[in-house]
Amino acid sequence: MKKSILIILLLLFQNLNAQSKTEPESKLQFYSISFTPLSIYSNASTGGPSFYFDVGLNMDAHIFKTAFLNGSELSFFGGRRESFYEIDLMYGREFINEKVVKLDGFIGLGYFEYKYIDRSKDRNQDYITETNITLPIQTSLRFQTGRSFSLGLQFHASLNTTNSIFNTSIILQRLL
Image 1 (cartoon, helix red, strand yellow):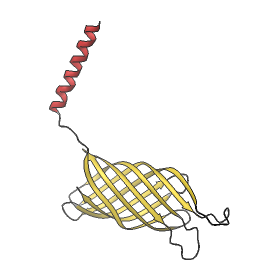
Image 2 (image 1 turned 90 degrees about the horizontal axis):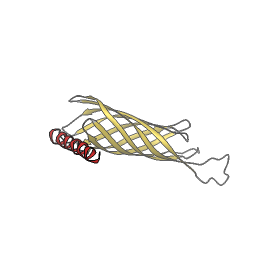
Image 3 (image 1 turned 120 degrees about the vertical axis):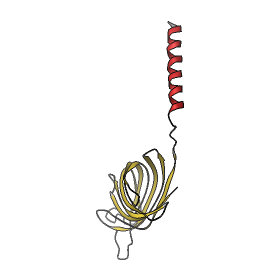
Image 4 (image 1 turned 90 degrees about the vertical axis):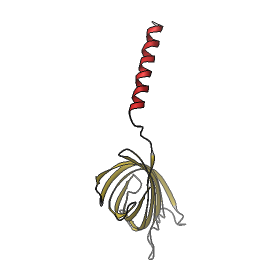
């Protein structure tokens, strides 16, 4: 019995080893770096400028991103003076990958931190910080302006139970 199990395992290992030699090996490699020079966020109560940055990795047609999004309300006339940041891990693909036009979509999980002053609860006006897990959903339409550079529009939604954020950006992407 032991000999037959050993023979089956050896044959299985030999078969897997032969397959790995004939198929090309897929490797995770750097894909792109993106950032937003002009970005605006909004939520249910306010909005303001924001900043977005990501690093993308790819394996075949699959793209993995680590992204950072930060925004703060411009409060000239009072208001809640809120700010937020999120760090996301996302998975996506390019749906349109033509020579000039690119369209991609991503979804993932992230960490979300939201700071605000709630004047109804705190007379001292100290910041209240809430953290949460977020579901980032993102799409971008880019136009390839050079061999490794593209410019486009990006739409990003951060869905969570604290305060969902919607971000619209002009994005610059450098393919690596």
